[in-house]
Image (cartoon, rainbow, N blue to C red; front, side):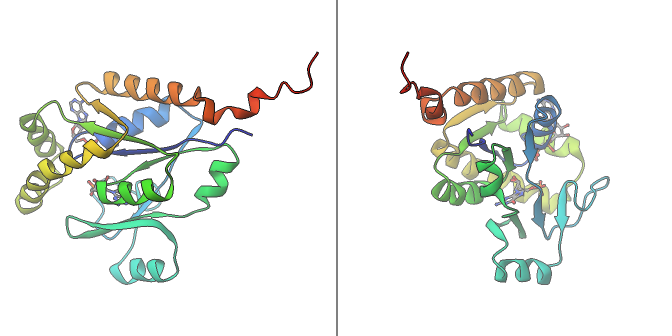
Length: 201
Ligand code: ADP
Ligand code: 5GP
């Protein structure tokens, strides 16, 4: 059985990770989304258990104590974490799993799971990044300023990823990520079972 792909996507807030991941998941039904837990308040339209598991700080700390996270981090003053949720077993069963997480979390996962695929999404420019966050209309001025201030430092960490994709249009970015996944599926290291010709003629 070929092990599934652990796909990790990060990028500065407002780059379009959520939008691109949604399209990717719609186009690739074999990929399962890992729903994170967070202590931030839900945005209009977000549903508990769909976009995130929305937890209180106390609940989040209980999950930490119970070792329920593969990784967690404090991002913009709120906790975010990837529930373990049998990720390892699911990968071993051949499931592909997509994590959309911040750079701190991704670097932690990279240490634990070096065979993951680490993709960094870039905005076409900082001006466009600002337009996108403002256009989303979800941040108050303070939160907007904090996200923009962090963006440049976060983008530098992208140099430690395996792949970079510029989210100019959603279609281009999604197509490029699909290309990455297609190539990764063909790696020898992921297909050693196909080399068993020992039986001979
Ligand atoms: P993130 O998850 O990275 O914080 P979102 O997916 O919420 O970002 O996208 C931020 C805003 O930018 C949303 O309003 C979204 O509709 C818009 N957006 C995303 N990708 C693009 C794109 N390629 N071109 C124009 N607008 C985009
Ligand atoms: P947002 O509040 O815009 O949904 O997400 C803010 C940031 O938290 C984004 O960079 C997003 O990738 C990150 N994030 C979401 N879930 C997780 C998670 O489980 N772990 C970590 N480390 N970051 C996360």
